[in-house]
Structure formats: structure tokens, C-alpha cells
Length: 227
Image 1 (tube, rainbow, N blue to C red):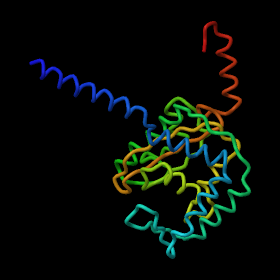
Image 2: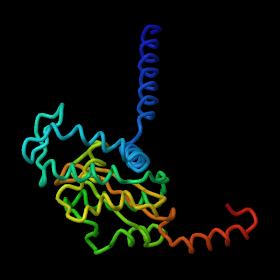
Image 3: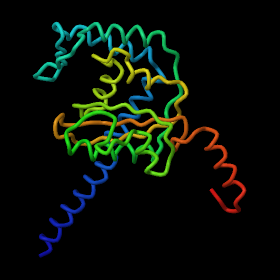
Image 4: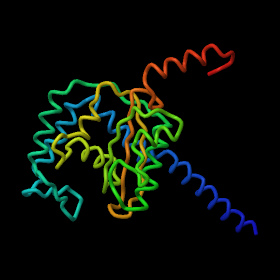
């Protein structure tokens, strides 16, 4: 019996260790926000990373080391070159601060859209990104980027920065909007593309106007004990 008890304890201790180790690994959502902030703060360094991609193109197909299959692109290396030129002229920007309310709205979109296998910024009921944030108790002044097909943070952010096949490079432009200060990220499975990540961004923590946020802070400051 003593021997059995020792084995059980060892298994439990081992399991506890594994749980602790797992908790120390950042979630995909945390990793995506960290990568976004790296690109915003040091665009020139990220341009250097993109330069290393050029050698892995064969026509419009990107063959990344360690991947058996190539990734089909619309523009090939031209989109990468254009992104490099943009990044080299880009001034460093402050990092985006995590905003839980924006993250909840982003996850709401992932849950619904991922199950349906659809894509785009509008929910099945016609709700926009601003509508989803508003339903969570915030405002409507938000922007949104969505990545489909990737469960790796580096690939998610690279897709949005290069913005292959998007003529106005709207995803990249949003990431480098100098007025933005907050972001919430939601990632999950997608029945058609395997995975998706939604990034909701705003000038304020809750998607309200700057003036409305200031007014709310002033009101709360007048209430004794309010935080």
C-alpha cells in the first residue's frame, strides 16, 4: 500500500507540474497582441524579417521552412516588397494596451462566425464590430482586423501586415493607426478555414469617444470610493 501511495503522489505531483507549466505559456491571443506591438514599436526590424521571406517564393507560392505545403498568395513577392518599403518609412508607435471589453467582443465574433464557417466583419444578424462592442457595454468607435487560416501568432500578424490581395492594405493601415491605444484579441476554430483571430482596436478602452470616456472618469471621480 505504501508503494501504491507513493506512485499516486508522484502522478499528482507530475500533473501539478504540467498544469503550472501550461499556465506559463501565453495564449494565442496574448501572443498575437505581443507580435502586433512588436511590429508597431519596431517596424524596421520587422521589415528585416520580411526580407528573409523573399528567398522562399516560387512564383506566387511561399514555401516556408518546416512546412510541407506551400502557401498560395495572390501577389507573390511583390506584396512583401511593398510591405517592406512601407515599414522602412514607418515611425515607431506606442504599444496597444489590452482592453478586456474589446477582447470579449472579438471572441463573440469568433464563436459565431467560426461555427458557421463564414467570413467578414458583420455578424449573421447584421451586427458590425461597433455593434458587438456596444452589446458588451462599450461604444461603437472601433476598428477590426480578422485573420483566417492561421493558429500561429507570427503567421497571423504577417498576414495582416503584408495584406496580400487587399488593394488598400486596410488591415495593415489599421495596425499602424497612430491614434489607437487599446486592443482586444479573440482567437478560435473556424469550420471552413481551420482557425481565425479577431483584433478589435480603439482609441479608448471601451470603444467610446475620448470625450465620453473623460466625462465618465470625471463622474466616477466625484463618487466617494469609486474606482
